[in-house]
Length: 525
Image 1 (cartoon, rainbow, N blue to C red):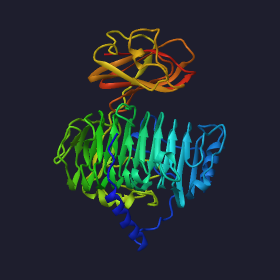
Image 2: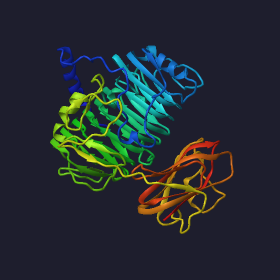
Image 3: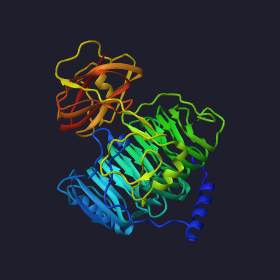
Image 4: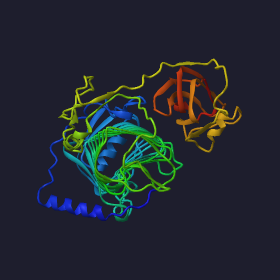
């Protein structure tokens, strides 16, 4: 775990903000858009995409109880819904509501065991005051144009473990956009993270948002051995007056571009425990140790390009403290599977100041550092100078069959290892050559991986089930290095695809009758 950071500078900055507010410097929130604009970007656009409540009913809510009632009033837990929120959501107006399509709790906005939901601030704005937003065992969620502030894990009142927005337990495809997440101090004052992900949370994008005045910006993974999270994109965000964790990455892949980091007091992007961070065209200002592996000897990796370091100081290296500076260079190559357009880092402070946060009219950059209203749907445009467009890796065409592949099963030996989210069973049982042993997910969905110490080329996999309570009815095969989908199918069997060099391959069960049993996850060149 990261060390506690002193909050002296944090409190001083808060005092300065209070003076600014008293003198009328803080701007009021303008009227916000009443609809979700454009589409999800970054990793939230992968794995089938993130559409939230598109195509479903739209309802209005002015209290937390009404938000819960809207979720509970759906025909099912996956019925699409857009909830437009206006006003202040607090403990007094956030009660538990019961129903077959929801699982809510008092004192927290609970998006638990549900899917296909959009929560968007409208009108004069939506402020979640000391009430956090908790996403658990859920997928396809959009949170847009909201402010979440002063959520505490200790003291009174408490909510959501002290996280402004927290995700855990098999969460997939979340897009948080044009939101403001803020605290009023560090852990000693009762606050925790602003944007946390743990316990198998994947395919998340945080865009055009403000994170400020907190001891901890956010983490990906709750411990050095909890490495099931990843595929996170952070772009066009402002991190301001944060002590550390901007973010903290434990394993997984993250992409940070066109963010403005200002006053990171102790450390910034903390890539550790094998994490891979692609860090490009960001503007780091008035900060300390903005990139590296900190508070551990479990190394992380990064690829850097186009960043600006303005008045950034660097500490000496130590056994458990490895800053990337004073002249940051790449120590890995990190690829991402989607297209994106880079603003020049030199204009990032300006364009982020004009677009990031709630109440900014959902403005986005046009790719040349000029704010504009987003298109209702994404459109393809030429990239003007000085932007750079990065093309995605094409999704390979895959074929699912029942015929067994030939050759050596690379899941056994060949330096392979694995990981999974399971319920009393071991991932090792899928790579032991024994059809009488098996791995099962915690329910009807889950994922199991095989990984190697160095890139290994495979072109087919074979998944063999053991007889039991359930059968796989839907699955995805993922490149664990990039998140790209290699193959999809219904019943388990053999899938072939163009030869791909990777260090990790994941079999993700998206549907099943009952709890399936995977006896062997075989990989072949």
